[in-house]
Every structure is written in structure tokens, then in C-alpha cells.
Image 1 (cartoon, rainbow, N blue to C red):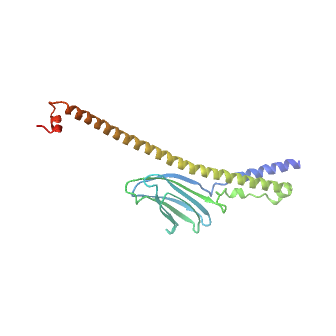
Image 2 (cartoon, one colour):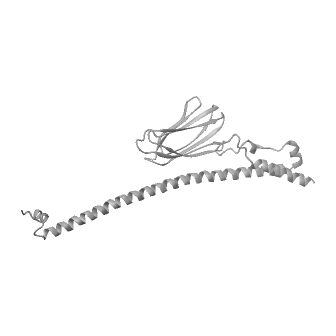
Length: 235
């Protein structure tokens, strides 16, 4: 009977450990088109004391640069970057309210920019917060019934957290590699279009020059050709 109770408590504890609470957490990933001479801003209500991580990267467009602004609820500039391809910033919030994140392409005359943007809360280790439910600890009554199994439950909990952090890190790397892949693919497609365009131009010029050369040579040997007479300097 004691073993069955311990087993039920362990399963119940593990269930609470691996189910995060998403009520106060968020993880935002966007790919945004910012037209030339314009600015795109995003608003998010955040709580004081939280640490957030912001990642942005210009995927395509122009010189692959963008201006970035981060405003507090009191319209104070917390962070700013100018004409950068990408950025990775971590900030601890001091105010509760509506924060504003702006991607500014006003300096560009013609080129629109495609920008990847990510916003998420992180803990002190720089990993995404799993939620308040992951901090679950068994009650004193449960501790008495579990006995020495409490340490094993704690070890399993830490193992789950490490697995979660590793999976999340892998997912972030996949997102970065995906952005690189999109950028490389678009660059290859643009180069392919340029090669095709200039190949057609060069081929057209070669055909035109060949036709002119053939006409010129034939005219030199034709006595009645006005063009031939002009080339030979005769009236």
C-alpha cells in the first residue's frame, strides 16, 4: 500500500513539474515587412521585475540594416541600434505597463526590409521561463510519505528542466539557421535573376554585333551596295 501511495505521489508531482503555466508567460516570433520611409512598432504589456530577451535580424532588403528602438511605458528610450543587421539584447524591466518595440526603415529611400523579431521572458540563466507551476514543491505531508523519494523527485525535476532548456536552445538555433537559410535562398534567387538578365543582354549584343559584321563584310564585296561604297570611301 505504501509503495502504491508513493508511486501515485511521484506521478502527480512529475505531472505538475512538466506542465508549465502559460498564463503569465509569452514567446513572440514575427517576420515583418518594413517599407521604405516607414517605421513599424509593436506593443506588449510587461510587468516590472521580469527579464526579457529581444532578438531581431534583417533577412532581406537593401543593405540588410535597420534601426531599432525600445521604449518604456513612460516613453523613455531603453535601447537603440542604428543601421544594424541584427541585435540580441537582454533587459530587466523596472516598470509595469505597455512597452513599445520599433523597427525603423525611414532612412531607406527605395528598399523595404524583411525583419525577423523575437520577444520572450528569460530567467537569470538566460533561458525561457517555464512558468510558476514548474516551481511546485510537495507539501510537508507528501514529504513524510515520500521519505527518501523526495530527493529523487527533485533530481527528476532538475533533469526535466535541463531537457527543457536544451530543447529550447536547439529551437532557438533552428530559428536562427532558418533565417540564414531564407536569406541565402533569396540571395541565390536574386543572383539567378541578375545572371539571366545580363546573359540575355550579352546574348542580344553578340547577335547584333554578329549581324552588323556579316552585313559589313558582305557590303565590302558588293559593288552596288551603298553601304559598301560608303565604307570604301567612294561616291
